[in-house]
Length: 343
Image 1: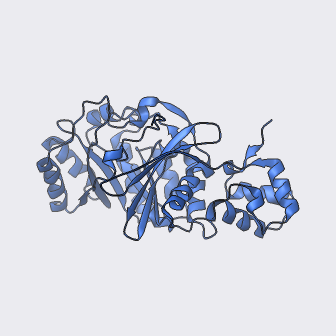
Image 2: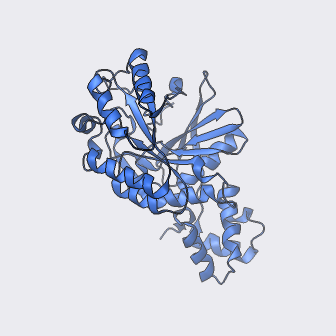
């Protein structure tokens, strides 16, 4: 039998594994620091662990780290898109977005995606598997290493539905947040869901102040069903109730992602529905002119329609902004990740 991957364990699992070996509690922090603070790729690199413990760990666990298959750099803004090969040969993409002294990493939580959103390239290849906690967190380590700086922000907005892989996503975020891990502040770690209500409820009860974003894309049920078929099981009315409860419990603002699509969700009726959905809710609407996806006939809204939505939302007292497009020339923008292996 192949050895279990140490990256499959959350912090509690690491602590239990070390305890079973008779090790003191502080060893957990040391191991986390090597795995997620320093990005060790071999147990032998962990020089402050006793040699006998390093041998024991190497005998019990494999230690994977994503291998770079391809890196593309945007000529427009310096965004970098990465294709990684994982230990079992599966591939996944992530994106590094530099902005002055800040580096944001857009990470994936699954290989492929089962949600089937009409405007997203990832789901076209279908769902393959969930990522392990370490496979999620390692994307941040690997991207930051390539930039030669630390990551200041991470967003689970890449491939996959994070709340369909809830436990691994939260374990990864805790490694990224930990002082002995990547040390990224909780509010600088954002999880984006298509509206998985059980995940939203669970996140509201977590002790960390992670940021929640919801891919809304329409506040009209029939339109949302056609654009996001995988989210049909969570109706808008129930989603609105869950988000109101989330805000009441946490006191934190929700971000709505709204990809504006010409003739689909950018009409005046759609705008009025969006205004009603946001009314009385602590939220921010991030308007995203939809990006080109091969095989899709969907086109982005005109600048005039985008501005109409922004102005109407702000006039109604709803915070709204238009997302600055990054990395479109290398298919690294919102909805364009699809783990292609060809050069």
